Image (cartoon, rainbow, N blue to C red):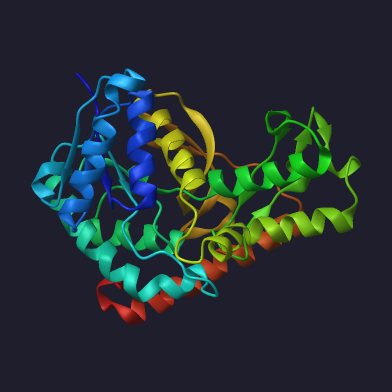
Length: 315
């Protein structure tokens, strides 16, 4: 029996997710959006490419939450994108209202799903969704670390003139300006990165990684990144659906790991058929741990701001 994957939000990321999932044949797709015509139009457009690409799945566009019932995976992209000059945090008030409605719809119609959040500000939206929905923390995770790590590896590959696949690295912490790229845990063709690049150049790449989304927003002017975020979300969904047990950097719930409790932040986790099956604790140097704590503190502070906006979170 085919898996059922629901995409909440039929914007640029949602449409790209639907297309990638279809090509990979990960499951039947329900594309949901409050603007019914957008979801139906994109679903029909992708469905009409089945004869060209040769994939065999069903696509449905809808604005009815009942159509998401019994989903195996739900990926949430609903929310407003950034505009030039905006930070991810500037989206908090508007997207908090949206995620509350989404959480209620999922809790009522598909509470056993594995849920991946992509909506910004990522870490706080994941925390808010989990609070609103009451879903188990192992079944609620945020897509950020894969994207940030991919950007870091791409920028390094361009500087070092090596294939991206030859680079092993990861980015931890919140999905924002305090994210923590890990050069000391980065290998290029199995050689330590720090032996291959000058500190001044590395610092510039780390800064560009932190501002990777803003750079794209500046170019697009009327939107934000969608191809790379969608590809990252698909990798997470695939690991869950196929029980691949990949170790992926994701915004996951921490209950004491890395000395942090009751907060979502980017860390390596193993994703399999049980959702987030394990938080992988890697050894951090003193400065790395300090930066990680600064990043998680920023998430906590923003969540406190979210509580002031909606007291329902403080429960």
